[in-house]
Every structure is written in structure tokens, then in C-alpha cells.
Length: 394
Ligand SMILES: NC(=O)c1ccc[n+]([C@@H]2O[C@H](COP(=O)([O-])OP(=O)(O)OC[C@H]3O[C@@H](n4cnc5c(N)ncnc54)[C@H](OP(=O)(O)O)[C@@H]3O)[C@@H](O)[C@H]2O)c1
Image 1 (cartoon, rainbow, N blue to C red):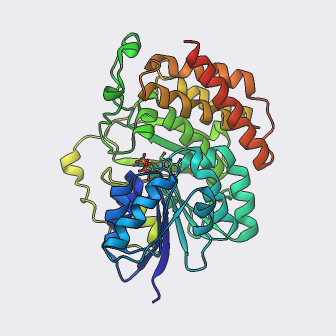
Image 2 (image 1 turned 90 degrees about the vertical axis):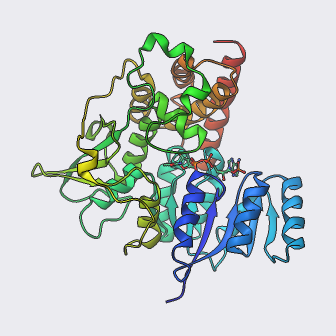
């Protein structure tokens, strides 16, 4: 069997590194064609030394120059490219079969859309891009034959529980409800009154998962779960009132699908992203992931509770954005990205995140989002407004 050609957008991040860890277990199945990052020269250099891709892409010219000279000195023939246009080109190379979309945030939108246009199989971790442009992604995929496989653990769980032969972008037969589980994040038991004291360091400590900083903060505000509700709506064609969130602090059940007859099917496993990544890499086959096996007797207890939407307002903001439609999900996402970045840079406090996003959503929710240009405009306006509000100390 010819190995599948792989391009990883964001190979130096948490998802990117986990993907390479799975690929390393199956050298006969996968051939790495392209690896990309923003500016992490050292990590990308190490990855190029091991996987010897034909191409590496960085976003910053000086970083690309440094990487090329290090690789040349080492006698590695990887060609280093630079910038958004090159990023968009490597995803559509004929030798690339599967594109792992693992850039964080809106920066992943254009390369992922290009991979969909090129009809590739997309292993989608970059939820922000789907939230911004879900309808465009799915319409383009149905035209080009691209398939979208969900890497996000909850959506991968839902995907695994769908009827046989199910493909994303369609409404599954016989399914009445989707139930997303949430760990509740590090502040599940913290009083709301203490939220203004939360530091970036505290918010970057997830109880169960090891991930990039942005998604870890999103887990702490529960915006991550809100983004996932929108993601589930787009991928599986469900309305906001057909998607529930249940807090499940052990992160063992990764999500559930409820069928018309009342059956609920769940996917369980240790909280390790190599499991959904391996599932997507080999789909529809199954391969080893390297993850530790789940022992139910060791876990012993599984608990569930409803989310506290008064304490975690970001979750209800995301449900609202999904109901409002048009550019509201794009605006929510853009404002959240700016707010989280500012919080990480200690320019605003944790408790301000939802109120700033709410103000921006109220200003721009009605913008149109029918084309890529309209989506990018809504994203830009929401970012500018969020930035202004933060500068003004709102
Ligand atoms: N981590 C998880 O377990 C997990 C689970 C579910 C879903 N996801 C989703 O997967 C995506 C990636 O998350 P992550 O945790 O892996 O993030 P991460 O660790 O922060 O990694 C982000 C990757 O994107 C690259 N990148 C950042 N900004 C870029 C830009 N402007 N242009 C090009 N590349 C850029 C980074 O390169 P540098 O290293 O050079 O900065 C890095 O390779 C997110 O959308 C997240 O919501 C993650």
C-alpha cells in the first residue's frame, strides 16, 4: 500500500506534535510531505531532521532563512518556504492526501479553505476556522469532494458514535440530540467573585488535558465548549436546541449521541489527543495511537452536572451567537481571540473576557457572512472593536 502524503499545518503545536507522535509509530503508512509553523525554528528543525519533509513553511522571513541554513548545514534537503501564499500552496500539492489543520485561531482559515478547495482529506483541529466559515467550508467540500474529519476529541467521539457510513456535513439518520461533555476547566469549583484574581498562569493549568495556551484559557472560561457547540452544529447539521453540554470532570466520556429510540452511544478513552488523531489518520481503519488504555476500575467514578451558565457566561454567548447566525459566530470568535491574547499578556483581567465579547457581539452580530470577503471583514471589525475596548479599559 502506498503511504498517505501528510501536510501538518501547525506541526510545532500540541496537536501537531501529537500527530507526529502517531505518525512515527506507522512509518509504512504515512509520508510527511510538509510541516508548517509560525516562527518556532528550533522545534521545526528537529521535526525536519526526523521526518525529512519535502517542504517546511514558516510565516516570518528571518525565521525561514535561519531554518533553511540549519537544514542545509545538516545536509537535509527540505525546502523552506515562507508566508501565507506558500502555506496555501503546500496544502494543495498533488502528493498531499491528508491535511492536518492544527494552526490555532483565524490564521488557519485560508490554508484550510485552500486544502478543501483542493479536495483533500482534512483532519480538522482548528475549530476557530470552522466557526468563522463553517457554511463556506461545507459547501466547498461538497463541491470538491474534500472530507472533513473531526480531530477535536468531543466531535471525534460524536463522529465515532454516528451511524455506519456517516459523513460530516450531513444530518445523521436516527439521531435526535448531541451531548458534549466538558471537564469544567480549572475553575469549576472557584467562586465567581474570585474570577478577577485569576492570573494567566492559573488559567493555563488544565486539570486533564495538556494543550496550547489559547485553547487552555478557552477551557477555563468555557468558551471552548461554546465554540464546540457551534462546531458540532456546523459539522453534524444540528440546531442550538438539539445540542446539550454536560460537565463531566473526569474527561473519560468524550461525548454522546442520542438516537430517536432513547439509546445514547458514547465514546470513552483516556484524555489523550493521540486517540482522536489516530482515528482520523487511519479512518475508516483503526491503528495504534500509543495512548495509555483506559481502566474503568481505576477511574472508579464518573460524575455529571449541568454547566453553570451564570458563572461561565461565555457558554451562553456562544449559544446566542449560534442562534443569531450570520456573522455572529465569526464576531464571537474574533473578539474571543483578541480578549484571550490580551488576558495572556496581562492587559485585562479574566472576568472581563465575557463582558467585552458581549459588547462586541451586540455591535456586529447582524453583519453578513455569505462570502469569504464578508467573513474576513466581520473578523477584522470585531478584532478592532475588541482591541479598542481593551485599550479603553472597558
Ligand atoms: N491542543 C489540543 O489538545 C486541542 C484539542 C482540540 C482542539 N484543538 C484545536 O487545535 C488547534 C491547535 O491547538 P494547539 O493546542 O495545538 O495550539 P498550539 O499548541 O498553540 O499550536 C499552534 C500551532 O499553530 C502555529 N501558528 C500559530 N499562529 C500561527 C500563524 N499566525 N500562522 C501560522 N501558524 C501559526 C504555531 O506555530 P509556532 O509554534 O511557531 O507558534 C503552532 O504550530 C486550535 O484550534 C485548538 O482549538 C487543540
